[in-house]
Amino acid sequence: SQKIEQNSEALNIQEGKTATLTCNYTNYSPAYLQWYRQDPGRGPVFLLLIRENEKEKRKERLKVTFDTTLKQSLFHITASQPADSATYLCALGKETGANNLFFGTGTRLTVIP
Amino acid sequence: NAGVTQTPKFRILKIGQSMTLQCTQDMNHNYMYWYRQDPGMGLKLIYYSVGAGITDKGEVPNGYNVSRSTTEDFPLRLELAAPSQTSVYFCASSYSSSSREQYFGPGTRLTVT
Image (cartoon, rainbow over all chains, first blue to last red; front, side, top):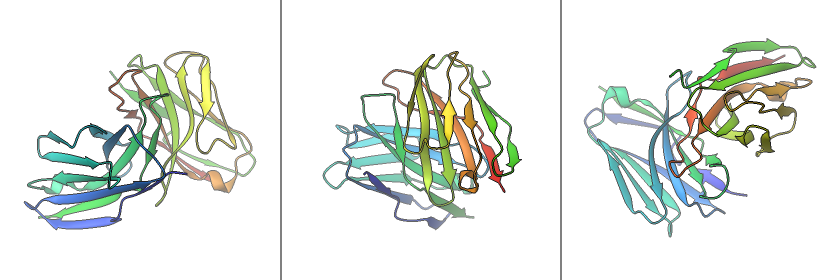
């Protein structure tokens, strides 16, 4: 079965630095990959989607890369702020079916002022 | 728009009791999902629906049932609650299009003792 690993359970960085989160997967060939943000006690919120034929996607201070050869996605937050502190989840999906997603376990990011 | 709403927010059940978790969305989404989230385990898909009257099993359906009589509502039924069903439950919905992003409710925290 598919396996999705976000290789840091927790990541602490200084305000203003770039945070880089990693999502690796095996036994799966996703058509797209999504990143979500989850705050304590709340549901995940969609941030970005990148498809298998795209190398990079940007949205404001966020950047996502997708390497289907390495089976890896990197999620970057530039000029990080304490308000970026949250858990970030990656999720894989295929174009067929009901948009079913397989989620990673998440990385808890803390931005230290 | 309220988005995706879930009730109740918290519930404590005794072993063997039954209950229904309610989920409603007002975005006219065709696709709806139920996930459970356990500490360190990521979100796991329980059941999903591609439209009124159509439901299907996800990764972890045992011990649960669903129905979808309207586009808006997707209740999750727990029969004979067990301690293993202690978790946080999230309902989500999405468009049946290429956008693929899922909109999540605030979650229901369930404890079975």
